[in-house]
Length: 170
Image (cartoon, rainbow, N blue to C red; front, top):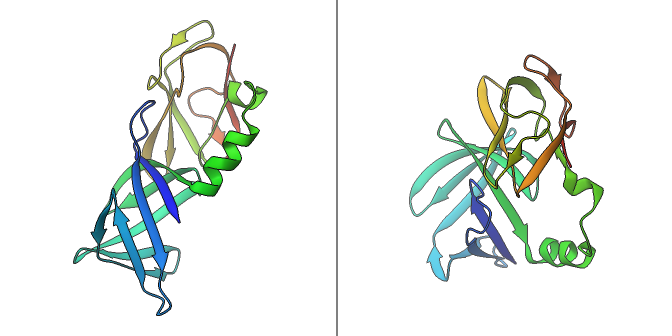
């Protein structure tokens, strides 16, 4: 199965192509942008222990594909992971801008630490909108497209649940 991965997603950035095939033995055959990579993955109580080309990394993820938070070696990153199937399904559904594209939702449960925009502000792709703290780590929520802020549904200090409405674009 081919996966398209964007690290700390930036609109317009080229994704990394990762091809994963499970062999009859249960081993994984992995190619990253066409180059073979030696990989082994073991699930451990809520985390993954990954060996990549001889380096071991403990990996914890949060959220659901395609938008994931990944914590590896104490460093948090955001990744966008789409399989070929997920990408094809999204393309089939995409006919026009839907109401959901006008909403920014919380990627995880946490506390809003800082709100950096106000109604009427025009934001560009990659603009920081607000910061949500989860598990003592601050996570910036960024705009994915150029838009005008219509409503900010939260204030600094507010507790939010995963998938809760944060901002509506006009």
